[in-house]
Image 1 (tube, rainbow, N blue to C red):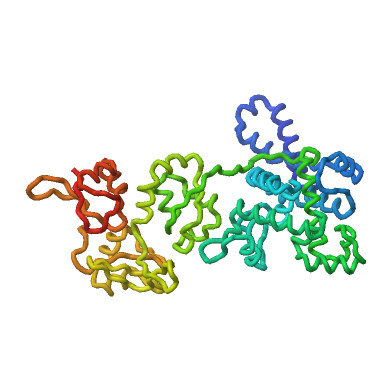
Image 2 (cartoon, rainbow, N blue to C red):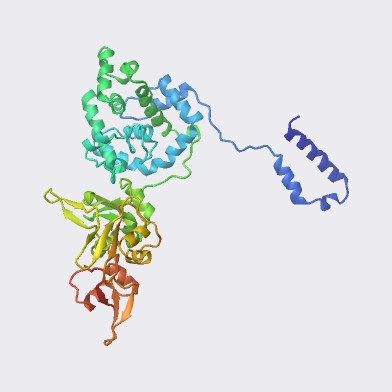
Length: 462
């Protein structure tokens, strides 16, 4: 006898005894009885998966309106079974992401006068994950290889990878697919060429005796491509018949609306987040092509996406925000290329005694401080560091003589004016927030014509 059945029998006998024994039900702890009863109850929590036949699916497909030819066959039906029965979790994951990207897909495809059904191709390519990378190096929602991405105007380097940008990659995918359609005159064949390349499709056409439809050249295509287009069509059916297969959209994610800004300078998303009170995760989500959280000088002209809810604030305060973002510039030298700028890879001393030191592999704060005859505490103070953690490529400012005082404010000896000594990392806005003044008030007090300040400078703040 099974354990559960045995315990059920014990419970029946036990409860019978309770009814026959006067007052026993009052003496036996009711919470323990409830717990025992709960333990042996059968589990009815399972997911209902509706049955369906080939004929039912065929009728549903015939009733669908589609700009692409779509007729059911055994291969497509097998994928419909797989994603509605055996791998429902994948379909649920796609559903959770669908609302985040499909509006963008539809808008882009309509702009290029293409069938909106093409958007289901991204499900098969990436599972709607904009940062997924394949084993061969393809990246993003539409799985572009680096060379193809660059061919369609996407930057691909160590700091920025536009293949992860949903807007840019979707536009590039639409252009590429449209060129493949012009080449082959059939959307299914164009999708096959997107997967395996136009050369393999031409070879399949030749080997098939000149047939020009996907199913006509099916047996001559690479094995992966034979599964590729049927999966696209399976999802086209499934996502249009969710209720029939007991799928519901429980926790969808939606896109963050944004506006684009050009700062024309290197910047850190974290610093931008701090200055604008924008959630850093939101900035990273809508700027996925920024790989390391920083836009370098080499990519300073790229547009940064800002949540629409904070766009008006940014427009009104763009001047001081740009000034604050650039208050710790990398030391630069002109390169041999006209108009180009390159960072200096060694410490450079300015006329004021400030040294800009670029952190190298193996450096720690202790060795850097010792090398320049200063303390770790001073280095941390001059660079607004909260910990001893530093990263390769980071620029640290060190003062060889007359370093700025660590005391933020002081009183002038005679006039009684309250002053502040500018520290590395400061901007007029940061100083204004510390002392409850406006940027304009500080500029008037100090007869400043611009927002430019430098470490060691003494400002009147009251």
